[in-house]
Length: 115
Length: 118
Image 1 (cartoon, chains in turn brown, blue):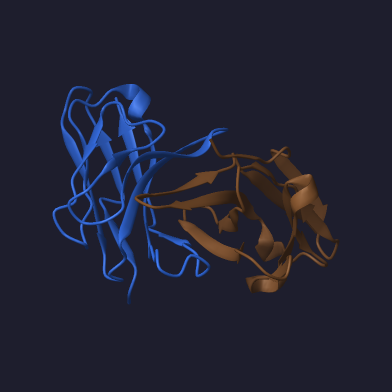
Image 2 (tube, helix red, strand yellow; image 1 turned 45 degrees about the vertical axis):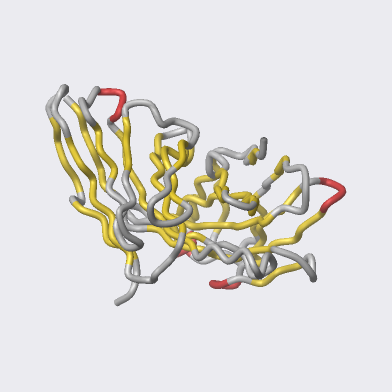
């Protein structure tokens, strides 16, 4: 069964500082990996995704993530955070099998930005 | 604007009552999903549907039922609500393309329904 672990429940960073949110997954084959962001009271919005090819993927809002197969990780990074980045971030792994497609989400990391 | 619409936005429901959460998408996506979001537990899949006419159970299906009579609609029904079903419910859809496995299957989410069972 696939699973996702986000070890950091809550992270606080200063505005302008760099950010890295951790994500580890468990999946038997090549995974489809996603990062979603959820602003307060809102639904989830896709930040970026990885399916194959270049292991460093660029997303919206200046975010990037690197797929490392050897470490089963897909960490999210941003070189300089903005106050508007305060939100909940979810990593997810997808499985595309014939007749069955599901996303499994991590428990999320809440990001707080301090001035 | 294309996307997913959920209704109602929020609801307070007496325990034992029946409730249907509505979800409609206009993107002609094959697959649709219902998740519940609870603090500390993230999003957990309740039920899913790969295509109209088919449904499947997710991680936490007990107490919930779904139907998929057509491509656009995927209602979630609580037959007899209990307080443990207090949660925020998200409907999502994705374009499941088997013939192009590398295209990917990102999910698009609705704004959620906040349900309180008292």
